[in-house]
Length: 484
Image (cartoon, rainbow, N blue to C red; front, side):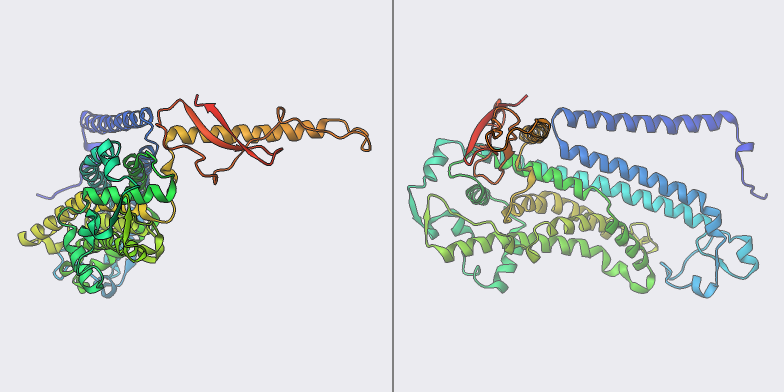
């Protein structure tokens, strides 16, 4: 019996209609779920999660275009013929099984196709699965991180209790070795780099973020950017920064696609990547965690060198020089690379044995859990210790209020300019035009003014206090505007 290809002309119409109906139903359900999710984020003012969702949608659209291009170009690409000597180089397997028929055009010339039709279909599956599991693993990783950081909310609430304020009273003085933070980080190995790194490597596996670390880094951040005694909600700020970073990690940028092409090339048998590639993400993740723990220890050492007496509570000073190349965001890009890289190459001829599959799955699960439950919370806390604070320091309501002030300022400037230019010129010798500040005055924001926005007031406050500088006067005045 000879097998023949069944086309749509030989397929019952009810079968075609049933398959199309099933596919359309799934697409509508997914679209509806995404719409409900976006509506929920809008309701709760989660702007950065909305941006992350938009990135996922754009990735799905991009995958659709890639699938369309591969489908349309299937036959033309398969008709591109190359010599057999070139086609047999850099093969992924030492004993490949080639069951796909070659194009008649290439077979007649004694050559092989650049990429067979079967290979095009497998490439479609590979790209789709890679992008899908990348987004899914990012969601799971950040979900694990958020779950562990939920206890930080109770730590933040503890900073508002009388007991915490009494124990951290700035009128109390302690020797630096009497503080809990110094006893945790100032050991015999702290001053020696070759001893400090192994200790920081081991510390990330138990109590990677302790309560005293959170309190000390919180105090250093608030002291550097706000007034002493401010009740700024540090936990909510970290949550907003993590949501913004999630939008970066969940996306597949150009350099990620370039790395994916590099991994495809390195999948050749000649590189023996099955011996070293699965372990690279784990080693990089452990290196990032060790660096984050080392930053905390170095901040403690620097504070000890400046003073042996602590006023109130231990004070660390944020600075970019603690981070690699003075760039705190580099750690985020490394985590992006790690979450993308460990999923690549699961389907391979090297995974025909059960042992290979178990190793790959074990590495994937270990990287997922370690990144989400250990490294991510540590990253979220330590990266706030840079020199400058991030834009998400302002909650959504404050940002909207500042934008309205800016729009009103620009409108008032335009009104003032139009009023001045439209007024007839009077006698220059006897009369001068004095524009009253009550008409056309253009308030300009001085965001560099200390306490331009008072963070020691609750965010749910109905009023926003903003420093406004009058262009017609030398002094600056404070104006309260109702947050509509």
